[in-house]
Image 1 (spheres, rainbow, N blue to C red):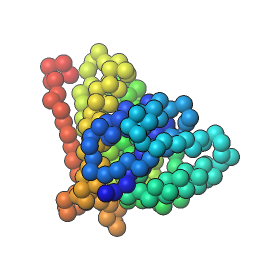
Image 2: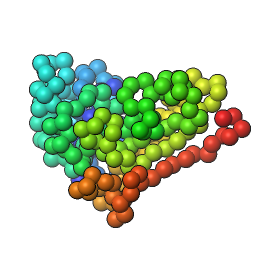
Image 3: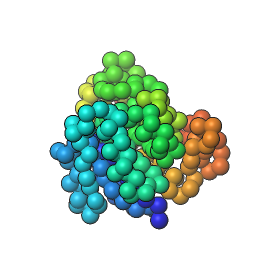
Length: 216
Ligand code: GRF
């Protein structure tokens, strides 16, 4: 059975979705960058070893990343899953785990990298927004895309309503992408391209839940 290590910083709803997805792998550990992350109690409830590597306890990003990498390696992970992990990782860290490091971002990348993606989407006036699972490379929010899901943006949307609509999709596509990886169907090839079921694609999958066109 393959080992997964999940990194969190906060609420942990993606962690929960992954834990409830009955994935064909073992979540060996959950590691948080914050001691007060409520996701830690989700891990405890599922009987999963959970530790905190606090970024505040380290003088530099490199030192934090080195301590984090050491803790991750203890669990010999086949896959490291960033689930709301709010630290930017150094290039060395990313290269160390490249090809087995995945992230979910709450926008249709390459649109709206960085923070406050729902606010950015509303300000830009886009009609479609969504979320993206991607392999992590040194380019922030710029790694090869595995799967995206789109949701409509309504004229009367608030940041919170839009965030909820996107989050519901995150909970669908993240377990899907992790499942593909664990089943050996998904990988990053030497050229840095996503390969799903033996086929090389620029972006492997798109989910579009029913769009309420009348409201949009
Ligand atoms: C999610 O929106 C995820 O896309 C982003 O951070 C948020 C984490 O939420 N990277 P949660 O902790 O999984 O509930």
